[in-house]
Image 1: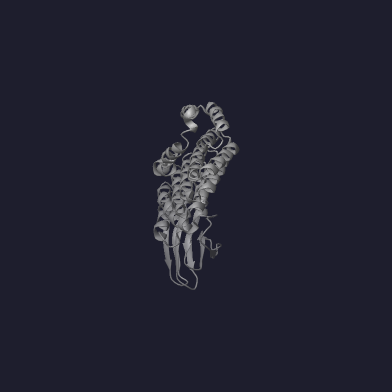
Image 2 (image 1 turned 90 degrees about the vertical axis):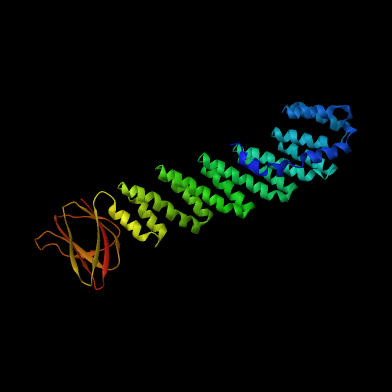
Length: 345
């Protein structure tokens, strides 16, 4: 991606004044360029032949120590070759000689930092961005945008650690990046969940929750409900049950109905008056029974016709196994009860 989106949106802000400053300073230093060394150094720089440019620029500085543009260009060469300490020293000398260069130095550091972010070299990028803000604190918006783009790029390659770090830094520079970061983590997690990679999806969802827990949980309700319904139709209810934990009263009836309708087995909605008993279904020994919801106290038993099986207290939640063949019976306590039951043979 090479930070294409970032440069489309912010490239002009970063580099837009470079030519103006260079031309203005060139007028002031025309005598220094008369020997022809600086233009040759520029040609080497344009060809990315930085060692040759460095040698010529050092010669120019030896002849004209107060040539700010020579110091500036030398710093750029050092920056492009990874000699950050040398670059900073040369930039400082350039700015001491021509203060107008200070803002452009900050932009050069942003450019270099964005390149390092694109190369996934976070440590170097952080140092460069810090230098950019030291020269021009007004670059916070652009630095934040660079980190946001880095976070989005990291998500494309499933690099969760880099994505979390980059988005966190982006938000630190501009709170407006929080909502896009949340959407990016949830979107990536949803795609992984839809592809069946639930474990990875959970990691991205957890990152989203750290960005904004309430909003993340609200959207997770929709995500788990949407994908959970599809899986429930295929007999897998884990996700639709998880939706119930995030949704509260939202989609409550739809979630329960999806669980009851999911194969295999059969679902039942049972309404009981106070102390009322109902026969639900004949079940075989080994049948799995699970109450998904209960609005009050109730008791159940599997009556095998011998009179030995007694009613016992039951509850919604865990499933249990019928140990005899017989009629499943449920009985309400002192108050009315509504039960949702799934029986799987």
